[in-house]
Amino acid sequence: MAIVIYIISGLFILLAIGLIFAYYRTKHYGLMVMAFAYGAGAGLALTIMHWWPLAAGFVLVWLLRFLGLDPWHDGSER
Image (cartoon, rainbow, N blue to C red; front, side, top):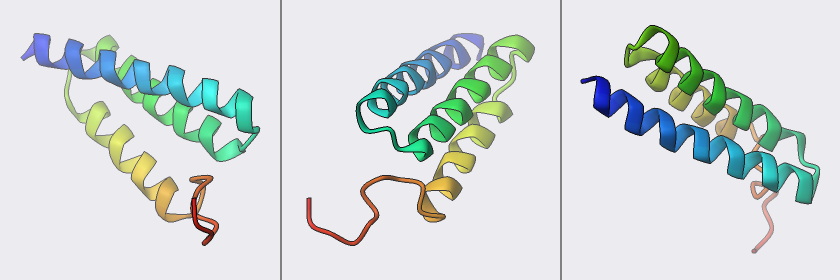
């Protein structure tokens, strides 16, 4: 189970880095908040070696997306 936590935490860290890069390009504060949620979930999962921080981080990011912090939810076409 530890190897699965390492793999998923690594993916969450990559997502957080990608979101931080996107934040510097767009300056949309929602991206930074979502990057913090992914990074905190991955860091906590690696620290206590348990799966629930990954699930909590994922759910938190989806809640933030539903609240409108995703920069592409402005109703316009891409």
